[in-house]
Length: 295
Length: 263
Image (cartoon, rainbow over the protein chains, first blue to last red):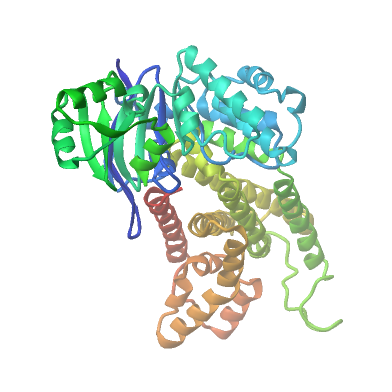
């Protein structure tokens, strides 16, 4: 799969604070790529850099295999933190400026305003809009001229549940239409529901990246106890399918392959002559995994 | 041209722009008319008037140019507002996100400054023609001081360019306007006076805005200088070149700020 965006070793510091420490990844064409991380992990900084509003201290990025960055941006629809428009101009006049800069033709304005349900308010000044309407106008502006990529930064921030669902539907629909979507969020749920790929940031470090079902696979854990803990630990380390054994508070925590069942663990222990006094399957939620990764 | 047409979209429905520009267009001729008629004067009623009422050719250029040099400050403030608006609304970032590079954003504003300077100069020329022909009753002597119209263009470019530079540097509307007024009315005079006091040549006159102010001095200054015999030691050509040089400094200074900083 060709990549629409390739990031190489991007670093950025604000004075003594390192916001990004050599982050690299590729965004495959047609994916919904989630940039996940807690607040302050560098997500917004990263998006700012690839859209040229922030200056990186090191590293490079390239859009569409090396297109002129500003030409590339005309093919990218973006929604960064707040909707930015001229307060004293109407929705229609604001989109005229956007369309002129994007060189996308004026005819599209009516279409996108209808899509985001603001056509009736096209002649109202931006400053009279509610937060939700401003957000919708920004989404409309991002869709002017039919972009190939959509960059969204915390798109559901401040929206009510209906608005959140609406955004999710929009992302799905646009992705189905062949648009690659890059979305930054601290909401794991949001990423899990819509993303195909994910990159996890923590304090400027890239922790993990790849297809979402690989990176965020929930691993089950099995807890076991026996009278002779030392023998048990030794046995467990030899059992096929067990990836990790950890002793905490008198209990062994086993991280196993997906196909390992508690029954197999029990049988294996019996075959080794160990009788278990405690056997428990613990489902590990994505939330726990995320916390483990990022905290 | 494309940049300028987008810049036009930004201001064509902006009331502040039309009010300030309209007042400039209205008040400049009104003020000059009042001065020429002796309604506005410096000095007691019936006594000496220190304002020049000479509005026939060629004095009209120097007179009109001097008042224009004060009125142009409102256009500078307008440039500051238009530029800091972009930072307030964060549309500077949006323009870049939408597909301009940073220099296109900058050059759109530079072109606006040049266009406003040209427009102000053309307007001053037209006003000068109207006043000059009215008070002279003929067009004789029209061209003898016509270079002063050119000086007014340099002065406009210098003032508006300085405003643009401040706006890009400071980013905050109120602070930028405050500093602009403080600098142009007070700070520069303090520095200029101090420098001139301690040097043989009036090199303090070469300060950014002062260099162009020297091109269009207070009308009776010329007369006073010729009476007292105090010849200016720095030529008009030098002032014109230095003022143009400052414009280049604003340009490259603002450019460096824009390329270096985060938006």
